Amino acid sequence: MSSEDSVKWLREQIERVKRNAQQALADPHTSDGHGVRIIGGKLAIMPSAASDRLTLHLVTNGPQDVIARCEAELAILGEHIIAHNQRGDALCFTCTDGPYPCRTVHLLASAYRHQPGWAEYWPEAVA
Ligand SMILES: [Zn+2]
Image (cartoon, rainbow, N blue to C red; front, top):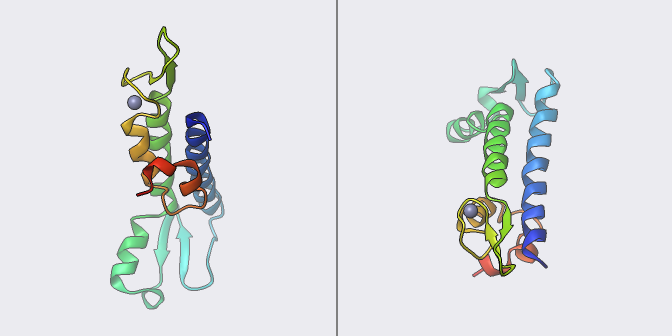
C-alpha cells in the first residue's frame, strides 16, 4: 500500500460522506421514518424521536454542516499534496518536509478511523 493509495482512500471517504449529505439535502422531504427530517436544508428532529443530548448532537451535524466540513477537509487535502525533491523523496508540497503524507494529512485521516479500510490504508496510525 503506497502513501498515495492512503491519501486516495481518504479523499474517497470525504467525498462519500459529502455525497451522502448532498443527497439528504437534495430531497426536501427526506425522513428516516423516526422523526428525523430535513426541512429548509436543516435537520429537524421531533422531540420524541431523540434525547435532548442526541438531538443537540444531530442538529449540529446536519447535511449543510457535514458538506461544509467535507469541503474544508478537501481544501486542506488539496493544499497538502505530494511533491518530490531532487532526490525523488516524497514530501508535502505545503509542509516541504517529509515523509508524505504529512502530519496534517494524518490528522485529517484520523477523523475516518472508524470507517472500513482505515487499518488497511493507515496501518502506521494504528497503535
Ligand atoms: Zn502538509
